[in-house]
Length: 421
Image 1 (cartoon, rainbow, N blue to C red):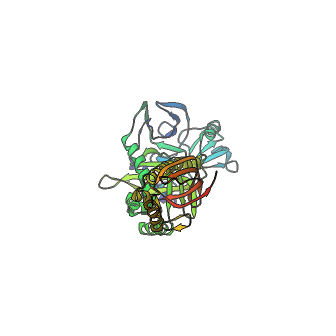
Image 2 (cartoon, rainbow, N blue to C red; image 1 turned 180 degrees about the vertical axis):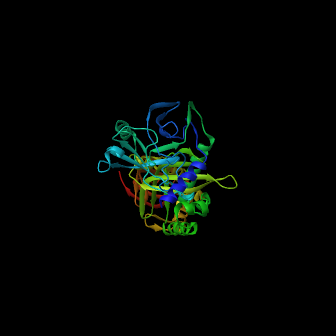
Image 3 (tube, one colour; image 1 turned 90 degrees about the vertical axis):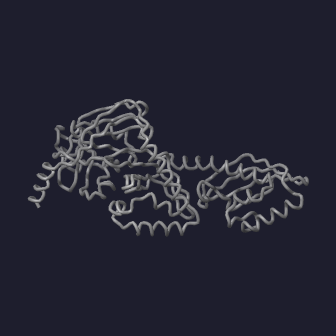
């Protein structure tokens, strides 16, 4: 084993991998704070990405004894790419000189690393209890404890990326990167396709690379997902504005994610890893999800859906006021229930009969709209005052239960009301 490891180290020195030397610039799709490790200069940079890019801190670190990108377990190299801080650990039970008092774990190997066959584990950012000298770890990034404490105050676990490079340069000017914007938009399209539960969802993936990164065949992944699509009556996937970073020959988009469906609700952080396929199209080659009750995520989801649903309710009111039966029907689920009437066909027939008897609406006023997320979709409650051209009028408290349809549409699954003064 020692001979084999020695051979690997000699091979790595003789045939080093292509070094990754990015230009770091400001970009609206990048995180507001960016951590960068420059291995050649043994430096850790903290940037503020708020137009323009600004240096907040720079301090000395130490990385792996052997230069180059990490390939296999035990090669004494620090990996290069985009990694995320997963958890904080107490290192006081370890060698204090080597690990200091605290460590922050990274997600090496990430999905692209796994697809490329890289091995190894336990790559951390951690402290040191002795003097920090260059190239003095087995692959981790180590620094004085005073800097680890600074990091502790800046890190949001699971949602903080660390860019590790051979070396890098940086510019203050903000550059609106077309590729970053495109990947952010693709991430939104991916979420919509997931909500729709159609075959288009699987078109976002590169089957062979995704299979290597996930460790299972793409057909089994597809079969599992399709089973969920078939099992749920509806699905609603919400993602925050994606953040995008460029790595060595790949990109990462990451965001808070809410998955809401008939019978299941979850929140967390999702990371999508993108590469170009042979045709030059961007495909997902790997993904990671971490369960996490991200602060403010559910509120953002509810607020986003509230704005959409209020628009839906207004368009529904207008279709009803116009007595346009086809337009009115487009707002209802096929299995909708309206009071004591079940099924869309029966609802429409009752409405048609009512309007043909001279009871078309003359006015419909809505006020006091309240929207709440529930296990069966969203409930929208409001006060409604309506009058028909025949002179009939009423005041009710109405509740519409809405669930996602295809695309961006929302459909009324249930409509209930009670009279009020």
